[in-house]
Image (tube, rainbow, N blue to C red; front, side, top):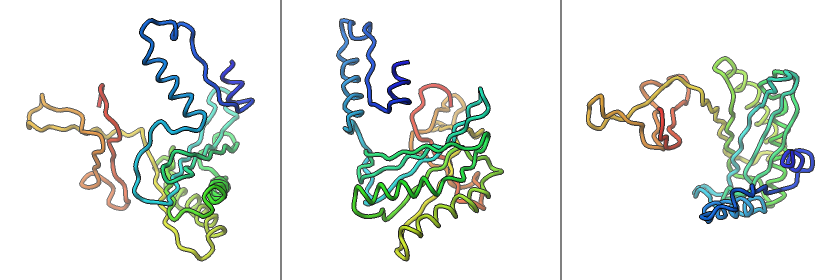
Length: 221
C-alpha cells in the first residue's frame, strides 16, 4: 500500500526495507543492495553498458492490458537521455480497451525528443526504437502506421536534417530453441552463450530478422 501510494499516486522515490532483513547477523550483502537501489533512485547510475555510438537515443515501447477489468490499456514509452544511457524519460498514455497498436506513438516520440533536446541542447543523431508486443499479423500495420508516425514526428523536429532511425520489433514468446553441442554428442547439449545471434538459415528471408540469446540461463533452454 505504501509503495503503491508513493509510486503511483504521489510519484515520490522511496525505499522500503523489511526489519527482518536488516536485523540479520550477516547482512552486508543486503545493505549493499539497498544502498545501490537508493543511489539509483536518487539519480545515480550503479552500472552502465558502454555503447560507442555518441548522441544516440534508445527508445522502448510496450502496451499493458488490464485483464481483470478488461477496460484499461496503457502504452508506456521510455527513452535514454544521455550518451551513457543512464538517464531516462518516460511517459504513459491511456488507450482504448484491447488496443495493442498505439495511435499515440508519435506523441510519445515527440515528447522524448523534446526532452532530449532540452537536456542536451541538440537532437540525437540516431534513434533506436524497440517495440514489444507485436504479433506476426500486426507487423505490416506497425510498418505502415507506427513507423510512419515516427518519421512524421521526426520531420517536424529535424526538418531537412538527416538522422538515423532503426525500428526493431521484439518478440520474446517464440517456439524456437537453440542448443550448443561442442562434443557432437547428444548428452553434451547445453545452452549457447549469451550474445549468440542467429541471422541466417532459419530466419525469414523477406525480413531483417534474427534470433538473440540475450542472457545466461541456469535452468531450461
